[in-house]
Amino acid sequence: MKKYNFNPGPSILPEFTVKNTAEAILNLDGSGLSVMEISHRSKDFEAILNKAVELMKEILSVPEGYSVLFLHGGASLQFSMIPYNFLNKKAAYLDSGSWASKAIKEAKLLGEVNVVASSKDANYNHIPKNYTIPADADYFHITTNNTIYGTEIKKDMDSPIPLIADTSSDILSRPLDISKYGLIYAGAQKNLGPAGVAVTIIRNSMLEKVVRPMPTMFSYKTHVENNSLYNTPPCLAVYACLQTLIWLKELGGVNAIHKINLEKARILYDEIERNQYFVSNVVDAEDRSIMNVTFVMKEEYKDLEAKFQELASSRGLVGIKGHRSVGGFRASIYNAMPLEGIQALVAAMKDFEKQA
Ligand SMILES: *Cc1c(COP(=O)(O)O)cnc(C)c1O
Image 1 (cartoon, protein in one colour):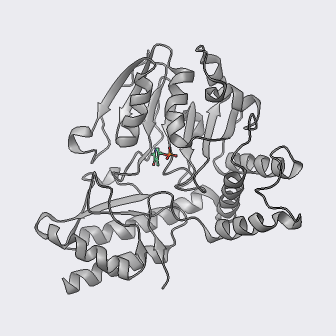
Image 2 (cartoon, helix red, strand yellow):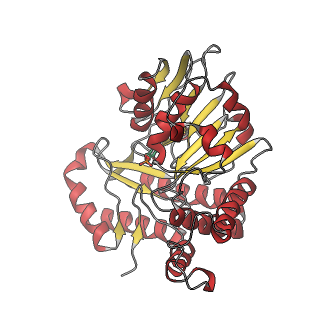
Image 3 (cartoon, helix red, strand yellow):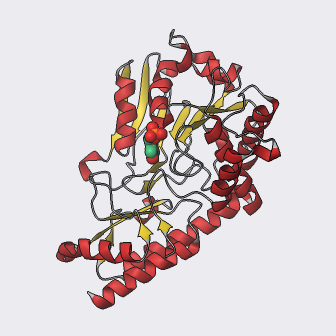
């Protein structure tokens, strides 16, 4: 049976990425060596890394004066690296979900944190609005897509201070105006590649703000100056990311994938609205994520949740169980999820309504 992988992360990747990476593990471009066996300082690997940086810049239209880094430690290490590098007096954070609150926790270890707004009291079912960004803070940190709750900030905001964004679960899903950000970062395992690597895009002038001494590996300067080769990078993961970037460029880049993503999300949200059994977890339609679609059974049908879960599993729809802090269901419909996957899920929802 054909399986559709709705897992939140690690998650679905393009077949192109998986196949090419499998081949390169056995034999990299006919070299007779595995991509796992070659030196990270070899010409072959440098070409892989440079191409990945170049494509990331091209696809996201990264302006001059920015560096693209491939780093270890996932998005969670960036939660610490950001305040180590940039929190000198005070930092501002938007608390829009558990990942945001984990980032806040790390910043608090290093200085004063101003949480400008939070939707925690509503179990993060919307993006907090109507706040002011304090002009005297060192930076303002946001999470563009809240993977667990299914909310998303879809517009690049204006900020009087450097804007820093965790884009782990929506990077490359739509165009971003990088010039509005001092730094963006993303763990690869949602929309780009396997776990083990995080991408950071940093405005080089941000490095002038760094005053705190810190471990060498924590310093963005180390990685910018060494082109992500200060130590051995996660070579295999970088190779896989490169495949996804090649795939995305062929497909037409972020403008093309954004159109497809909007259509996929629309079809699924329309069915959630129409179906008598389900309801969206996110009240405000404007906040609804196009990457992680969270929905629950209506109050009166709560006891039917397991039954729908069973139907979904029997049809090869994998990974739609909601996060324990929200319950219900979450369909993660990242770039690599084909339209047919959405159609299969919608068909299951319609059939469930008929049977139940
Ligand atoms: C998954 C996720 C993280 C954590 O990523 P790791 O690479 O596991 O540290 C952080 N932020 C967001 C928005 C995520 O979706």
